[in-house]
Length: 171
Image (tube, rainbow, N blue to C red):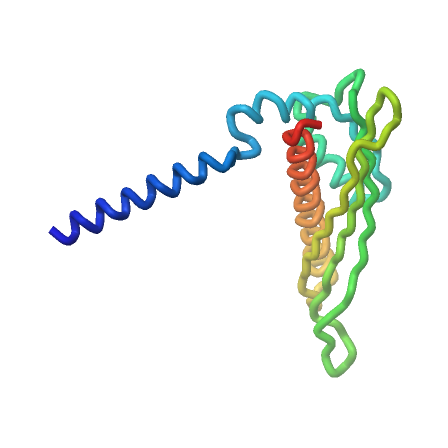
């Protein structure tokens, strides 16, 4: 009998929480209504070339996330991105060799209206990734490359999310 009452109370509590959540206007960013609007606006963004290897990686990830069908021939928006990478060695041993390193990838970006050159949205993203420094130069280089790949993926996902929020808000 008590179990049935507890189940009923839990079901009522869950129902009340769902009612409150839906009443506050919560909508997932990529839910049904947003799916019709946001990806269409993503498809209208031209991504300007970004210098350096990390810039190429970020741009490629952004192209995959924003323009999977290819860049528009007459874009409504232009996305300009600037990336900066710094490396800090940590975990210093007694012989003054590092055993760990941290990569900081800082990215600033600007969404520009292609028709009039007006800045519509600016943002800043940061990714911090670490890797081990080992005796093998190849293994260390591979670990550093993997950390840069993770950072490029993280900042491109963050940029896509921020742009989605901007467009969803009724830009």
